[in-house]
Length: 60
Image (cartoon, rainbow, N blue to C red):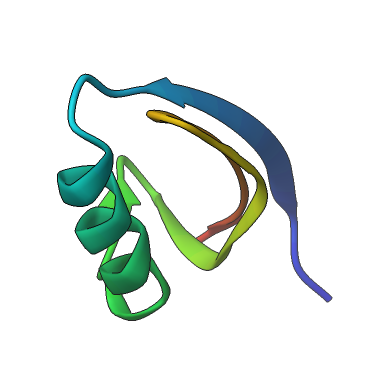
């Protein structure tokens, strides 16, 4: 069993091509912060220069 949190993060970018590149790299990114790590990151909405991602952060 684990303890964690699910977050939705809205991103607004001025450069759609750079956002595409960043989102494409997101599933393999090593994201962490104080005593947590990101177990999954998924794009749930995509628009011109915008995206909403859902993150699952798990206590380390």
